[in-house]
Amino acid sequence: MKTPLMGSYPEHDCLFLLKKIKPEFHSIEDKERLIQTGQLHYSQMVSQESKPTPEYEKLFHDLTAKYKHKLAEEILNLSCLISNNVKQDVCIVSLVRAGTPIGVLVNKGINNYSQYNSTHYSISIVRDKGIDVNALDYLIFDLKIPPQSIVFIDGWTAKGVITKELKKAIEDYNASRKVNISNTLYVVSDIGGTADYSVTFEDYAIPSALMNSTVSGLISRSVINDQIKKDDFHGCISYEHLAQYDYSNWFVSEISNCFKAVYYKLAAVPDEQQREARNQLTQNYIRLLMNKFSVTDINRIKPGIAEATRVMLRRVPDLLIVNDASNPNTAHLITIANEKGIEICVLPEMPFGACALIKDVD
Image (tube, rainbow, N blue to C red):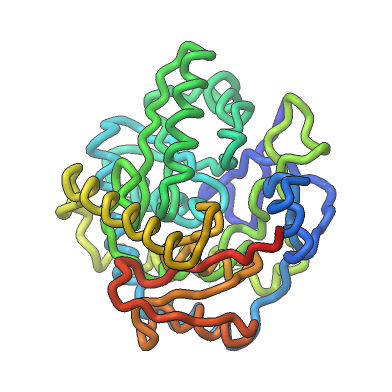
């Protein structure tokens, strides 16, 4: 029988439904070339991760200190929203990896402040490949978790690629397994107006977006390569060499320690009309950027501070766009751009804090 994987979180905080595989690392440049030439899908490759620089580490600490009360309030608001909607014990299914630390926090929020119990599993979903059906089978048929108690959580959304992937994947899964899991997606920040439920449209530097595995249980993003057999969970690498730099549990404590200063009540959250307006605004501006910078592949455009951070850390960036060069939320992006010699462009009318363009290496 398959068994969940322990990252660096305690078992009651998070279990990963992933299979640990043997590392086969690609450099960031090599990975980009193979993706863009169509030789390999991005999910087939992973890069080695190195420890964050002292400057970057300080930035992470500073932003956590700055936003921990805000994020704690948003997490409890999201927890309350989920409890009100599901109205029973909850199985949180976070999407590896950006959703993982948020899932840990929401799990704590529901368990500590609502009338319901919550469990948390983190599973893989991959653009163009769908969700890990073996992980869902494990939850429903092995652990006997009621399908209607499953709630999907991610950290943020931008263009809505994963939202669409989730909707289609769950629709297909429900049809094939004759079950009725909700394909609803909950996120903290929904800058693109594409999630079903969020607590803000604000594009700010959610601190967990700054780090990779060292704020996500020392687990890589999910991998689907030839080591993954038909009945396996999607794969991952464990970055145990970074254990001394692991802030996964520290980050959770920093945010959850603020819970007691925040009311567990449902504040005003964006409604459907606001979400549609926000979605239209984002889609229109993405088209404008594609025209302005002659980008033909939408996958090369990554709007939002969180996604831009991912590009600057894990991809080969071509251009960093910010709407305010003095915004403290984008200071870390400007630091990385300067370190890597990446051009920075300021567009004050841009409806999100930052956007990164991936270099065309095809």
